[in-house]
Length: 485
Image 1 (tube, rainbow, N blue to C red):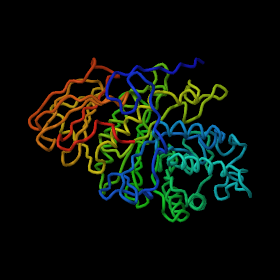
Image 2 (cartoon, helix red, strand yellow; image 1 turned 135 degrees about the vertical axis):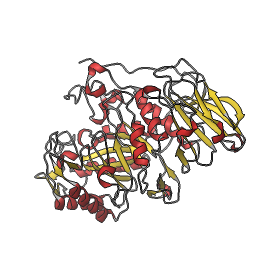
Image 3 (cartoon, helix red, strand yellow; image 1 turned 135 degrees about the horizontal axis):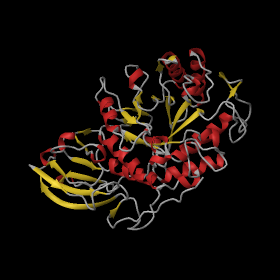
Image 4 (cartoon, rainbow, N blue to C red; image 1 turned 90 degrees about the horizontal axis):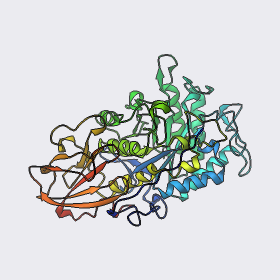
């Protein structure tokens, strides 16, 4: 097996929000990634976003670290979390009962999570630092100190609906409720937690049967244990959404879909659009899009997803109405090393994959979105005059509801014509925002009327993606990405 080198990128000379200078290495985010002092998370009044108790918007920037509790030592977990803090991730998605034989193969500390594989009897031992759950406590506590939420999956889905994988199936409704109650009570006081039920499995399947009752029982148990403090959602299998089974359930606070890894240019924006348009409205996001360094359609002969692919998925989803986004890296979710059997052709040791460029690009996504008002942002394809394109050329647009700003994502850097009347204030200040660097370049001011064509820098094609930013010139906004953590 060949282990690939990590690519280096040369940055153009723009006004850099995320870099010290043109051509320099990326600059780590200073301090904790997020400030928990704003209070617990809740759904916004307009049902489109997550906010804190004091109304401060929360931006979900997730990473999939499914095997974090199972495969890493405490020292390794701390190293991973620090790396993700530096890149501005606000949520780490990790699984308590892990996919890769997490019930039977001991953790890196030599522990198993359950007694006799019974979720009603977690293997909790007297004293500190001597069982599996003490290690989970360590990760949750370390993440808290770094300003990171844990999107905690109580179990991978194969312990409820086998379908494929190791399993074994160990849950019924009663055990699910008891286990949920245990978890909820144990982490009741943790401010940095979101519950993610599911785990890459359908809640109802023609062959495997209907497991919706089991998942609902687990959700009830979690709320009984933590008093309903923490938000809850559901992570489905590829090509599906939590809304298919639970949209009308009161316990489901927001919808999560998995667009998956089956193709380049997979139009995840269509699935976001569908969830965004459901009634009653609930916030939505793509909780597992194409992973960086994942073989396309699980076939290395087709190539590998790269930093461009993960940027494309992020901007398409967020501009279509998602309240945040989850990044993933194929080598990192499984914490692959050359001493381990790779899952689906993993090829880069996880400690090296931490440095892949797509993760840094997510920090630039975050800074752009937080540099403008959050809670009144809406998707709006009517900004685009003419055909928005298809395949890799598909253009997505979002704006503030009253027209104070607009973002247009151009995935292949082709010219776009915009309805300038969508911008309020009489004049629009235009910028190019570079998704690779977080740099911004002012274009000029133009009348906020009629239509105007904008031509991005560079040669059109794969990898030359740009965000056109249009601001109401009277608002005095900073350069895109500047002034936001």
